[in-house]
Image 1 (cartoon, helix red, strand yellow):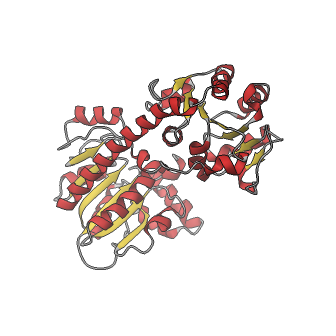
Image 2 (cartoon, one colour):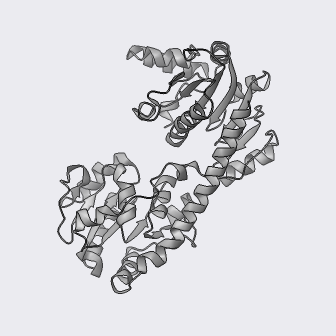
Length: 388
């Protein structure tokens, strides 16, 4: 997302170039917002500014927070801004809520920061993904309350409350000593994944007779080799679903598996034994996690990892996934790297009643413990904003 956030730092040249590109392609509203020409939401009442950076998880969390604050505090106007848009997200979650407006936000250039603060006049700011340096210093010099959810300290900002999303962020804030209170780290993505899906996909795809297996994050060449090994194993009489690490990589994954079907073209009819499905629509992952016998994470971002743990299937994780996601601890996911080891572990399920539950229960416990921690932090953040 680095490209999407160009011009949102403090560099004048980057800001000028980004604004010029936007105006040449007709995106005048984004260029105006980047320069700080923001318009407060209509109506009366104090303005609360929910500000997100460019990372998708930060934008998603900011949208959810804006909605939660709207329901908790009906007296304020809420301005939600971001540095990179996820089309349709705000509309789907926030449509119909009054005195709430959203769109691109200002760059961290001095004039843009001053202009945005003057035009919004916020009584408080909730920064999701951290605060950029000039904005942080400007807020510290004003009577504006600040809470930070995710992201490291930039220097100069003095938030009343910080919700770190991981241990590194918590350590950085504790070392900085500038926050009034630093909560225990908790990943908010646990609040956004589908936690209690019905295992209907098993009956829909396999007629209730063929087990489903799910492998996530394999590169195209690795996927082709994995499919060949799977078909030669005892588990090859089931159904194998493969999802890419990034949704945009589904095309390359499907090209490497010419005999595989795509879930976007699937007509919801039972699949034959040995069928391979490429998941080119990530909205299926929750249903897949609830129906799969086992999941192997060759590589994984936090969202895929939490979805796998939440589904109740047995979970294994390769070194790359374990390094990226501390949630994939040995107590929650078995450490397996070689395809042969993964398939041998899966084969145990065919001859051991209760195998899925025995290995899936620790994964679900890890997920729910993490979700409870995130729920507690969310409630603390909302209570803090309610007191402003």
